[in-house]
Image 1 (tube, helix red, strand yellow):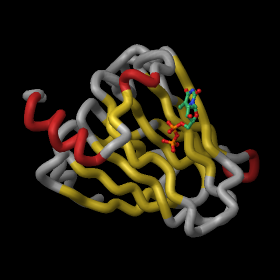
Image 2: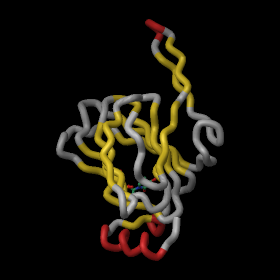
Image 3: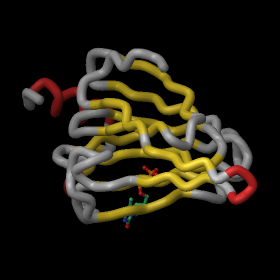
Length: 143
Ligand code: TYD
């Protein structure tokens, strides 16, 4: 696994039961596998276009854990100082996206399904959607 050089991120390794012909069972438990209580779960599918891009924002307070439960995609992470791109293609390895981490998802393979667990309810005021505003926010907030 690539070393994570950005702030406010981290790997999550999930438990997996391999039941052979009966499939795989993977488990995500709040405060055990994920270091926060989960208030919201959402998923993204039907990503038909390989040129699709999602994300392109950061959050002020929200913590999220992102998993690619089918297929693969490229996760771009940027903490305002360091940037890296990670191929997310393991259904048992997720990533923390903490506050002040600009993230993008792109280069989706066919049938990619992304699952996200979030520490809070949806709140548009928690989003930073403009990259210059993000850099300014990073300058003014020690995280
Ligand atoms: P957004 O978080 O920008 O999606 P992504 O980061 O995957 O590109 O959300 C897209 C739209 O969906 C946005 O207009 C608000 C809405 N939305 C909700 O209403 N509730 C939610 O929990 C989320 C994640 C999004």
